[in-house]
Image 1 (cartoon, rainbow, N blue to C red):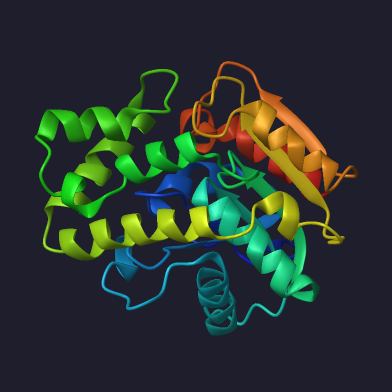
Image 2 (cartoon, one colour):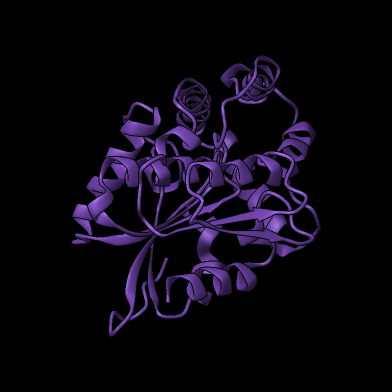
Length: 255
């Protein structure tokens, strides 16, 4: 993502979700005001597809901190989507002094998963499944969570399909499986955020089937000071479906 001139803006690190890449934040990042966006690919995605890593939240958080070091960012705000939100929350728990503000968009792993939910997440993330399903099924799976049609959804689906069938497909599908397992085995965000003080914004699509508003709202039990915004008419990918709306919420909060 092209960075805005530093000027008087503040840095914000943008983290994507499972099966995505930094491109998922392209439009929302450009629409931010007063902030300089740094969108990172997590291991197994985009430019980091071949990065060797372990995929539990603490390991991914340390990866993000190392990327911040490489960019010369002693401190920054963090905005994470889906599994990227779980990782952003872990960064805030591990290194609170380096996070000036925290935005969790459709966070997965907000609360502990029951047995049935764990089976559902595992079933849709196995490498053997991702590597063998027909293209039509893969497109349907990549589309799940979007509430409407549009160029953003189409672009995401095409990127997801390319990553899971291209030259780096083995790395990508391995990362997806291990990342899901890492979140399922880790403490929920509701536990990790207890005692943290970083200003916190929760953005959740009204119709999100993967991170329902009711689950995300339970984070207020750990952080009653957080701001909770339910985005009407949007699903699991609000920063793709309505990037300007999401950018406005983030920019306003960070002021």
